[in-house]
Length: 244
Image 1: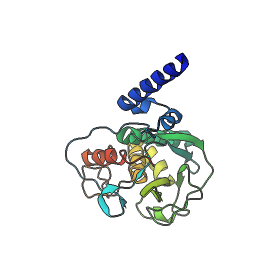
Image 2 (image 1 turned 135 degrees about the vertical axis):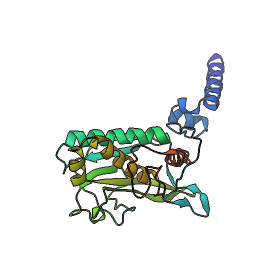
Image 3 (image 1 turned 45 degrees about the vertical axis):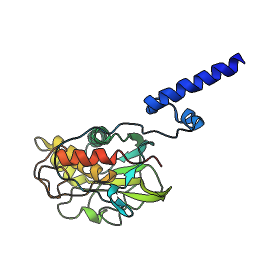
């Protein structure tokens, strides 16, 4: 009887903690309590104006964007082949991933190196050979036609229907290797290539282009090196999607 009472008290305590701080309960325990998964991070509170647009919306709801599942980590592999300084390229990508994680509350996790090469149907739709992880790589327009012209990178994700909700499952970012090498030889080039990576990761998690020179997601970057007010609002909303 005593063990039963202790068990009941423990369940009540766990349930109370889950109600107040849902992210502190391990998924297995949450499942046992019947309270379901919880987001791994928390999207920041963002106020102010600014411009943002989403790449995809939930069917029949123009106000609800398609998002990644905030209750699962987004595994990311990096293939730096094709640039002169592969270590520097990797550090730029990791820094941009950290900025996106902070701005959304989503957990972008480095899963290790990859020798996979990018494939694209369009500038927003990657060809995925597997569901995960996300592939971030470097290439030239000879390999990836979407990089032709003044395009410094492409990024996007593929979505599926789960439990009546459309959700992103994986994606790709491909950065122009020649542009990276050229910019890294210039003063301030590191900040510029990081901004390019952040822009493409913005596409990866669901932001579309805007026409607003205050925003990093502006279709024609005019020197913006960090997320603007609208970017931050859109990214925060993309971190508040449903757990599916």
